[in-house]
Image (tube, rainbow, N blue to C red; front, side, top):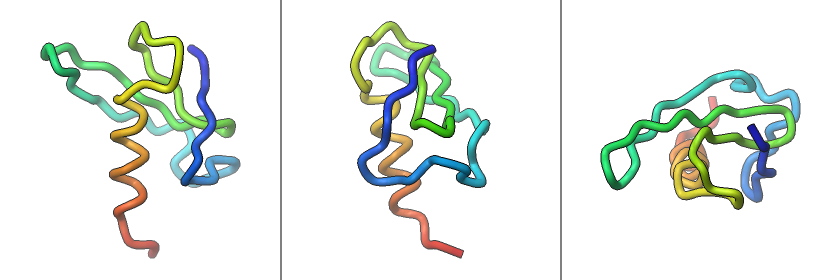
Length: 66
C-alpha cells in the first residue's frame, strides 16, 4: 500500500505507528487506514490521499494531547 504524508500530524516515530483503523466508506465497504512512519495508508483503490485517511487525520487532530 502507498503511504501519504500528513499535513497535520507528524507520524515519524509516532506512538500510533502500526495502528489500523476500520473506516466505513460511503457505499458501506470497510477500508483499513494504517499510520506509518511516513504518513497514512489505506487499502481502498484511490491513488491520491483518500477521504478515509483524511477522516482519521481529522479525528486524531481533535483528540487532546495527553
